Length: 241
Image (cartoon, rainbow, N blue to C red):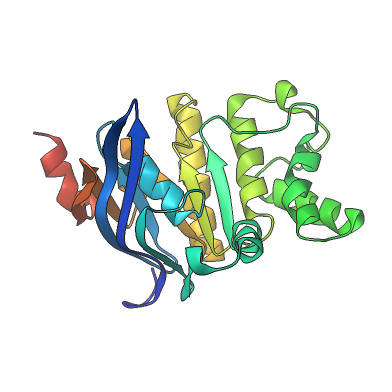
């Protein structure tokens, strides 16, 4: 993990309000959280706790009602839309529970997408995508479409796609949620390996205790507020009760 004080992402007084059926619902009620460069942080909490909403704020996928999200020293939502899009493409990689792969495209074509959007030539995009798929153990499956791959292999494609532009932060939303136990464990090990080898910061929404055990810190939310930030060792006693 990075030196203390080396903050890469920071939520400052973040609130998020939704209006559902005419009723006002505050999903986040003023969250402050600093994520350190190179750390593996998990967000957890019961359904409706605000963890997914916070994930979306930190990942620039949704704008807070009030408060600020700082990313590499920039107040993210005060940047012009074009710069926000650039941050999402170049500085952040996303991994989702449902993989979100394009079914008519091969593994290498799916991974090429972020590189192509960043302006690379087709040849460069292909080379980078193939190299990243090789790194996640799928160098032999470049031309297979998602429907020809197992769930674990599809998630490895999604991991490769998230990392291909060498982002500083990877956000993973329940990345083991649709996988069996053994396959989920292999994805956790892969994320740990890439976190340590590449120094990429990982922020993960999860209920998977193996993912929590792999984390440097766990941020536990309840009712739109952070209840506790702790290590797995500190937290597991609470979870047992």
